[in-house]
Length: 168
Image 1 (cartoon, one colour):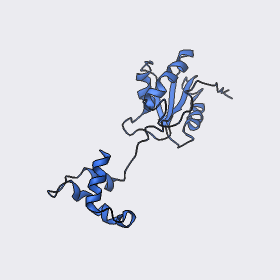
Image 2: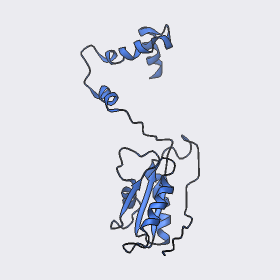
Image 3: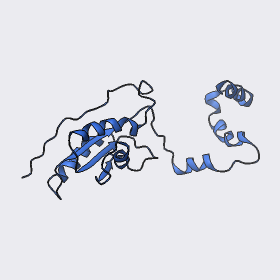
Image 4: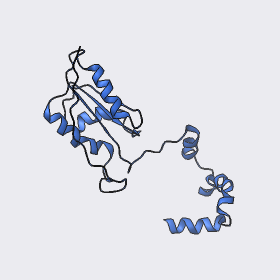
């Protein structure tokens, strides 16, 4: 039987979204943590997770290897299982220890509620990037305005323009 030990790691503090750590994306938050953990011993592999993955980063674990200046030969993969992502990473790492020469896995996770990616269904995203008609910018919002007109009773197009003018 293979003995598996889980050692406590290091972490950033919990803070409110939009607060003191808001300027950092998930990779920037994870980098000093991974560096500090890897400084203790060279891991044989890395499992890193993010509760709501950034769509511009396909594998945060692999990106973390480079951002933290770790050995690029270290295998790294990401796992996602909502709020259980890091715990799932621990389970995955435990299953790998003692097999194929792996003795130490670096496991962690990161989340930034200041930069939550908002994903859209394909048909909604397509509407946002489709070329606009010759009728101008307002034509794209007319169906939305009609649909929600009762909720904003009396706002109408002149009111919308005034509101948009104040918002910019």
